[in-house]
Image 1 (tube, rainbow, N blue to C red):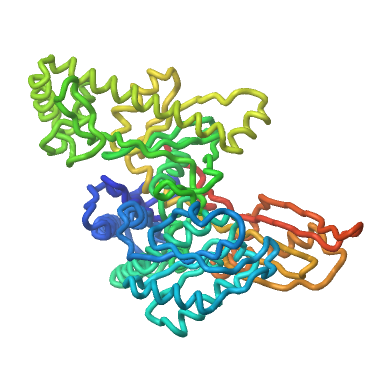
Image 2 (image 1 turned 135 degrees about the vertical axis):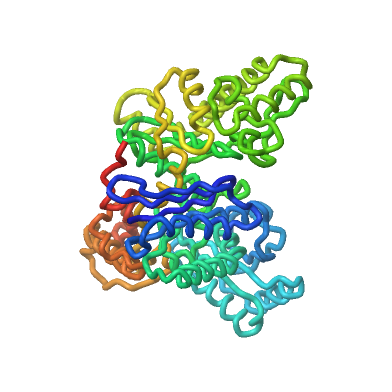
Length: 559
């Protein structure tokens, strides 16, 4: 049995899946003030329905990190940058407490300018003077050589022990200095908070006398072990949309071009499946408008959900916020779902309460109840269709989208909308009819996010940079640096073999050694280093991944 729980902004979904069926499920309102309690409440309700010893694995998806980052609730954090030569310092507008120090590594990891240790101490002294106890250190090309970042960390450890230092070479080792800086900064900001939460997770399962595998859902639609999440908590941001996308994929069955529309109480998340494969954001996830090195699906959240409040000002307007549940579920305000309930006589919850609230809204605006409800449903369809159209303009810029059109020699054609989430049953049929395409709404669509969490497999990616002239290599994201033997015949196959070995080591550290046969190479690049008229060496960049997908025992969902 596989157990998955997704804590969304409005609802917490949980399922237990076995032999093609959801054998237990729960859907509860999320307490935004106590996300952890929402998680534990759903867990306990599910555990009451089965023998917990039959559960092989638990996967959790939580909005904890997303909320911390969105609300700036992490502890005040400074950013120390070693930008070297190039862009003006003013271009690095990441946080208020940003400091710059001299020093520079070139793109091959050669130290061009040394760190000034006195300058570093002055910066660290100023940070502590501001009562800041955390700092992220990011050097340009530190993913090629981390010696300068490590030097700053050691100085802080020796002279400023009250200051916690996080270095980018241990967090995110890809190229692109600004994205690495953003990723490291946010990791430093929320790492302790996440680790306290991870401690609570371990305690909760010990109290329930369950010792199986606990994994955390990532933004890329895969999972990571709880221990791995302690080092890279930002990977768990935006896991909710990933859970929904993977849940929709599990329900879809056929590999057709589909928009996934996850309509919850507060927002609608829009994502894309290209012939049954999720579309990823090539530039990484965005946090506060800044790109990061977090692998993520190409998803957009629209502030429109089933519980979005209706206003009597002029024509009934849909407000971009939620103030509790719909009237049909005990709320005291008219909402989008109440309007659908009245317009199409859906009989959802207490339909009489929906009619009463929409009628009152009609009285305030001077219009009949049916006109009011139809006005709202038309606005919802118009808004969602416009958002999907806008997303296609963004998706068209993604490499995977372009490749599909080149390979198939035709324009991408949308074939279906897959509706999931609490409000999808009412909204999706009308939207699909308006767009003139097919739709899918499954009996498990209301808990698709929990289903997605339960079914996805662990993922891990390794990128290895090899410089045969310097006889060095570096590994992302582990921040490991190694030496290769001098060999003029070192070629692509040896480079790939080294990358595979690095992946095996990383997988073994996370208890995933059994999954390495499923690894795939996604990047194979090599460049000659020329000196004069001769080739002095080669540079290789190899990427290998255990890609997102479903666990081996998943063979589909029984209709």
